[in-house]
Image 1 (tube, rainbow, N blue to C red):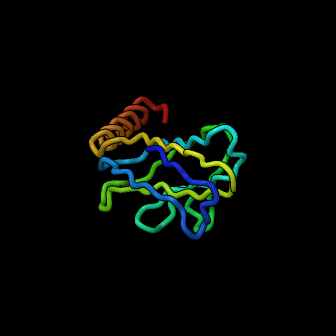
Image 2 (cartoon, rainbow, N blue to C red):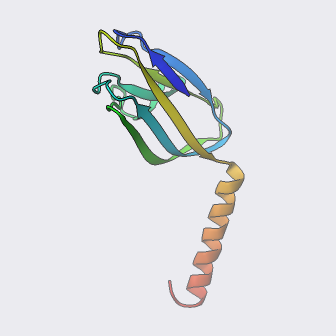
Length: 130
């Protein structure tokens, strides 16, 4: 999901775009910041009105010409199944576009992974490795 943020967009009136998410687990997050924004376009991801990436209420992520990414394990199995990309622009001359990508795993994949790990642990205990 790309979000165009006009020049001089204040923190008190950020531009926002919703992203519908399939039920499951958000396993990786990518936030791409364009070259030339000089870190002047802070962004964050909300669920309803609660900041979740970063989770600290007044925190944002910003960069310049870089994609900030991280592994995550955020549960999205309950409603609402919508995340909101929120950003403002301290650049008084140019608009900038921030792009968000998410990798998700279904509840079935999560369950299968846990079952596999459990079976592997039992096997390792059985053979005396663990």
